[in-house]
Every structure is written in structure tokens, then in C-alpha cells.
Image (cartoon, rainbow, N blue to C red; front, top):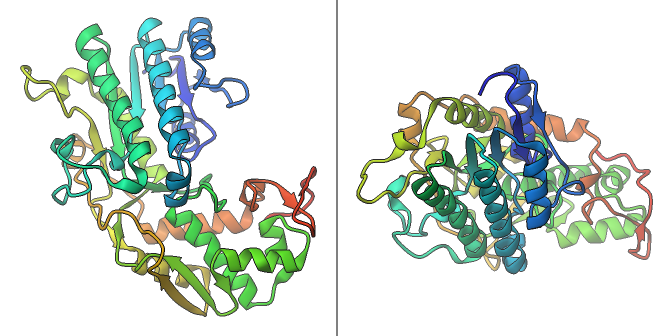
Length: 375
């Protein structure tokens, strides 16, 4: 890419997209194309085709996706497989059709089998059963990876796939309906601290709920009571985390330095050309909880609810291939979480309320205004 190339960042308002926008601007790229979901629904084939026909982007970062934590994955399986499959099909086909020079597709480590050897490398793909709780999402992401690979084989395109581990950072989702484990946990500890300090007004502000009794009821639904907090699962499951501001430079590095043909190891059977992007270490949910407790300053007790699901037992992904090519992560988990918490408490963000931005009155009905300050 040169500094004036037409670059389309699909999903620019999301966690990854926001980080990509920062990285692109910091590196001096000046011709970045974005569209909100209202302006362009990538699930809609006609809209997607029309966008590519009219704008002719040269490079595409495909970070747009319907994503969420274990609760969202289990309750919205059909949405996850349908919408993410449609996004991948529509964008990748239009990119081919309208001559995009290079596309970078962001997948997920959920594409790897639940019983993969650890650390899991790229060759583990297709080697076993997927983890049940996020299988629908994983299948859609597998489709995206396969589309890139097969369009390259048949049409000589240059579409690459990367597989990042659990991401976190500023601009993450904190609403309890769709948040991933780390931001959801961070917000729960923040609310628990407010309750511990009897800051009911702060709790109402954070939740976007006007009625104090309704706010306390909502805390209980989320496993928060005065002096204690519950976390789903045993706490023994292990996860990897990567800051979005570490992923973004990796994306730019891959886009600027790698070609599809460089990732082919066997010309007779082209497969597993995706690139893992990982921190190289993992942490138990229990240790993560105590780290966040310390960072937030909550003094109470933590309880682990073993009646709740916790997903795959352990994830640990190898990114030796990408690191051997020149990329390495820089942000430690502790520093990243501290920065994320500072951002959270100092940023007004109406998406954090219980209904994803909806304020509720004392009858639990949505109000049509957002006058509360969000902590």
C-alpha cells in the first residue's frame, strides 16, 4: 500500500477496526474509506456489490463481524453463522469482482478443533471437532478463510487470512449481552466496586437505569452483590489475550509485506495458509479475575459458578510463523488491562448500558433519550 491507496476498513467502529484506523492514520495513510452499518449492510449482497462498484477500493481490511462472548454465542447461533457467512461471501466475492489488489480477512482461533495440540499452529485446521459453544461462529469464520484460499487458487487473487486470539482494548463492547470475557469481567468488577462504596448514583449512571432498585436488581442478575462477585465457570479455563493495538500493526505488516504465494508450503495441496496472531502465553480465568480485581480496586470476594458454561478448557496458539517474519506483540496483559480500565472510567459510552444503549425507567421500559453520564 502507498500512502494514497484507497483502503476500505470494513467494521471501522469495532474494536479491531478502531485500532486499524488509528494505526493507518499514525502511519500516514490518507485515503481511508469507511461506512457505518446504517450506511452499508455487508450482509446485503446488492448493497455490498454496489459499494465496491462505486468506490473501487484497492485494499480491504475485513474486520466487520457479528461477535460476542459465550452468552451471545450460545443464544444467537443462527445469527452468528448466517450474518458472518454472508459478510464473508459478499465482501470477498465483490473484492474479486472489482479487482481489489489485496484483502486481509480476520478470522478467530475458534476455527481450530477443541482438542488441538498446544500450542496450536496453523496445521491444526480441519483436524477435529469444533468447540460446541461457539461452533456456529467458528463455521462462518472457517468459510471466510476457505473463501480467501480458494479464490486465490482459482482466480489468482491475493486474499490473506489472519487468526487473532481473544482481543481486548479501547472501543471494546462492554454490554453484558454481547461482551467477551475480559471486558465483561472488567465492567462487573467496576460495578462491584461502586456497590462496595455505596455509589448507587454511579451504578445507575453506568447501567443507564434511572431507578435505584431496578439497578440493584440488574446487578444481582449479573452476579454482583455487596462484597462479592460471581464469575461463570470454575475459573480453571485458560485463555490468550492480545491487545487490539498489537493486532493492528500485525495487520498492516501482513498487508504490506506478505503475498499469498509466500504462504504455500505444498503446491500439490494448498491449505492452511492462514496466519496466527497471538501473544504466546495464556492465563486462567481465575488469575485474570484476580488481576482485574487488583486493577479495579475491588475489596470483596470472588465466587466461581460451576453451574455456568466456560467453553473450551484451554487455548494456546502459536504465532511462530508470523513472528519469524518480523512481527512481535509489545503490550503486556497487565498494562493493557490497566489502560483499558482507565479508558472505560473516563469515557462516556452509551453502549455500556444494560440494553446496549437504552435507558430504563422504574418499570423497566426503554426511554427515548440518553441524558445519563456513563462512567
